Amino acid sequence: MTAQRIDGNALSQKLRAEVTSRTQVLKAKGITPGLAVILVGENPASQVYVRNKVKACQDSGLHSLLEKYAEDMTEKALLDRIESLNQDPSIHGILVQLPLPKHIDSQKVIEAISPHKDVDGFHIASAGALMTGMPGFWPCTPYGCMKMLENIGYDLKGKHAVVIGRSNIVGKPMAMMLLQKNATVTICHSATPDLKAMTLQADVIVAAVGKRNVLTADMVKPGAVVLDVGMNRNDEGKLCGDVDFDGVEKVASYITPVPGGVGPMTITMLLVNTLEAAERL
Ligand code: NAP
Image (cartoon, rainbow, N blue to C red; front, side, top):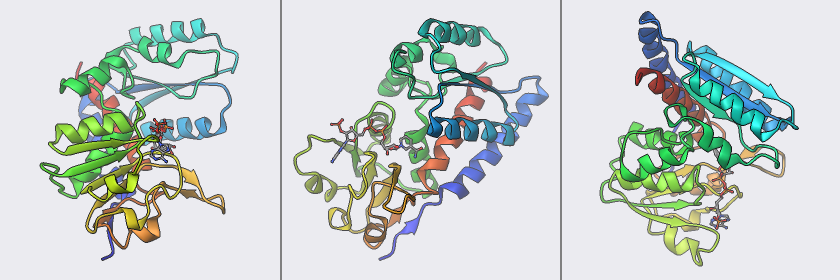
């Protein structure tokens, strides 16, 4: 068996076209969805991420505001800026690029964003809404994974999903979303004694660890669906995921490549969340 690839670029293109047309509908009513992106410091990876997010907004007709601040910006100055963006009617979504410099408390900053503008879905109110099945913003990366499953017509009801990783931004919300769609969910992490015993039982595996080859072909049940969230560099410096793609591709039924899988979906779901923040007004 050779797995079918789930093409995150193609699905993103389709979803972004929908964002563009829904944005035009809002614009006709005098509302332009707006995203504020805040970057503090000079982290090179963060610079690339924020540039891509702003460009994606522009391409879909959304208003975007990129604010770059020096590494030594005080926590108070950042909190004050967020408060004024909370009050700004032209801004529907606020994103603070992580990681922040060490002297700034990231959690405090996230909690300062109005839950109505929390398009990253990291606020405790958004996490609570997801946990309880209430309306709220879903974190973009796991939300993108759910869209990929939806797009292949995969019915999670009664299936066993194994999530590897339990971070607040990927693993835990991923598990909640899968649970909401009636999967039976197992969450694995660094203290899981026998990862292979868990993954071999899985119909769906989401790898969100940040280590190459965490999932190899011998750990995958034939026909399983494998979503690779990881972003790592191989020995040649090329982007790769957590999954041994060449091996697992021969066992799985569907698999996401890296690059070109979950990555583009993350930005796409950010656009969707920003649009929905504006539509909810
Ligand atoms: P994180 O906060 O570092 O969490 C990693 C998780 O993996 C932790 O829960 C950790 O367990 C677990 N883990 C570590 N080693 C393990 C092992 N050997 N077996 C099983 N579990 C293990 O990372 P994250 O923010 O969730 O991100 C995960 C990966 O996704 C990274 O490569 C990141 O770059 C990537 N990512 C990609 C996107 C995208 O758009 N494609 C978005 C976000 C993140 P403990 O909790 O026990 O430490």
